[in-house]
Image (cartoon, rainbow, N blue to C red):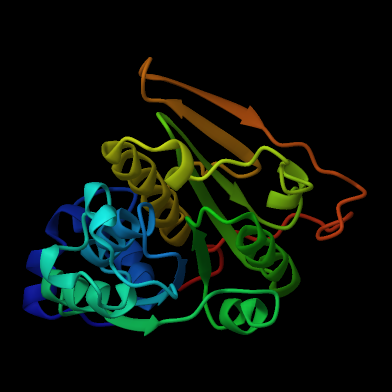
Length: 257
């Protein structure tokens, strides 16, 4: 896969990075990534993946930009209020990097369409705040053999995890918590979305290029008030309705030329 002179200049800091280099940048350009949710986490995820040169970003979100989004969803401006998030995001991302391809899908991801969306990509990132959506995305990733990078935020705390095969996200959260909170109800500090979204993008880049050690089967928890992080291992649930006793999957970047 050839790079234009403009791309060589654009990705120069990646090309000299030992863990990425030319082969890794080629993998990024060849990658097709689904980002579920173009909100607080999807905004920084999409910005950094587009800037990194991920060839195709598929953005799925049914919502329009609201003024209350602008406190943390840094992809949007006042001029985008009332417009579909995915269309506004596509414009912004292409202005950042015209060498990538953006596919905006103004749709919710549900149990009915999740598998169709997931099967056509190499990697899935989910930053939604709805447990039904998270469960549908996780189940589709298990069924289609795709790696999932998931993130969540609330108040001052965020988390990032990577799941491939078993354990899966449903092993971590078997059922919708009865006291589940949303950012709309309890609030969230805006900069936390940037922290966790950037971590999700970093995990995606590692997975695609084969660099380092991803958070596979682990959950990184960040406390913004104390500035502390901890990482916990997620145990596989043999009774999990999604992954059961499925074996771990090859990671997103493995086997790529």
